[in-house]
Length: 532
Image (tube, rainbow, N blue to C red; front, side, top):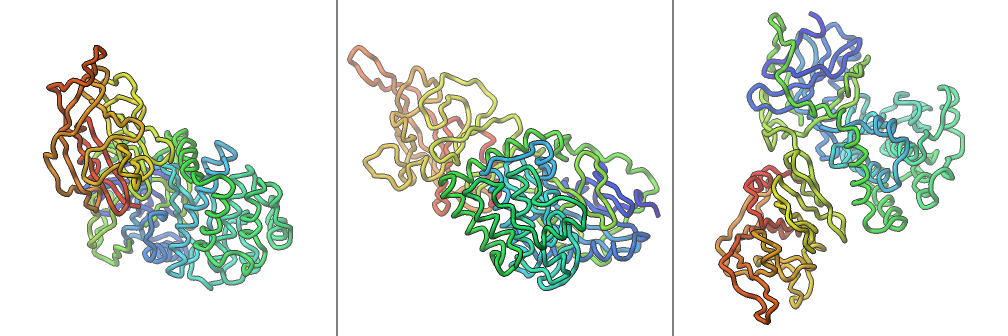
């Protein structure tokens, strides 16, 4: 049976993302739930070692659960071949970002390295070593938070194999010695070097690369001086001289980054990385929308999932913009939108939202997906809080946290809400009370901010709990009175105008969401939020 003919029952194929001599990768959606997924197919006639490698990849990924690692939903093993159903991550490969931009600002490069190390640390925690970390195996979504993919040659710590990508292989891999978490640290540091300098640490043919990785000095002088300790440690020739694993290296990275670039380095890095990614938005696999699958003609074999099926929990290995990436091991470059993992064999759970792909915004561990027509702005001083503007008539800008008088809402961290400040400061958020930002303690009247220059809360009209993802927030509605200022000595004059301020407060995360505009879609956006 031909490679293009085999399809897993229950999924509608949208389009092919990559093809090679042994298999193909497609973008698909679950026929009932509509969840976007990527499916990697290897037919029965593929080489036995290729099929076994795909099974091994599924086994490795099935043990790793982390937001920085793409998820595997299902392994299908049948008479027609082997297939894995994977998370769809809407983003672009780090390889493509480097090819387009050449180098990244240090904060952006550090952000990618940290995200990758967190994903590797999750694998190391369950005894899995990636063994082939490289730019093509990292995907960056629109929010700038990188995700690790493709565990095609991953193995258990201690397994020896002279495999990997020569530009990033650690000395012990060249010697055929057992791989360890320190092996992945070496590769990640090589990629970090490339992101900073625009070139790989060593170049040349395979023999030259082997000699350089094993014996040449670490080229730390090529990076800015504050970052040299990370390069020296991460690329040490002896694995015992490197951090023992990715988790340990994250701690060193954070210390170096904070000392060199200040406490806000990661927020700046995420913004820079998101900007570099959005410049390549045309390459996002879901950007074109999930149109009905083409080419699902009659005669295609539909294989059910009642055979050897494991709902083993993520990964995506896909091609971008039609590049043929499915090789002998059917590995590739992946990019898609996350959906929830399977909870039972034979089905894929729906994603948090069944609406078209949105624009992700993140504060700490909270991630919202807002409609593509909405705009956003990060706030000072932290650079983490943000405001979302929805389509509507903007009014004269005010000195509000958001600096704007446009319909929308705000998602604030502890700095922006004045959390923990003195009770004498009217701009400090008091739990369950009406909120005014610190720099506009007079208040804001969305009905007419130019006419009504002050507000006063009158009464609490509703309180309870409301979902923000899978967590419950304290929810409050305050009726607020608008006041007009008259310069004839009358001062503030009470008006007949009121509005409702809605707030969602998450005390454990110290996050406050404020809506003065009664954005009707907001409760749904918050209910579909995810925690990373």
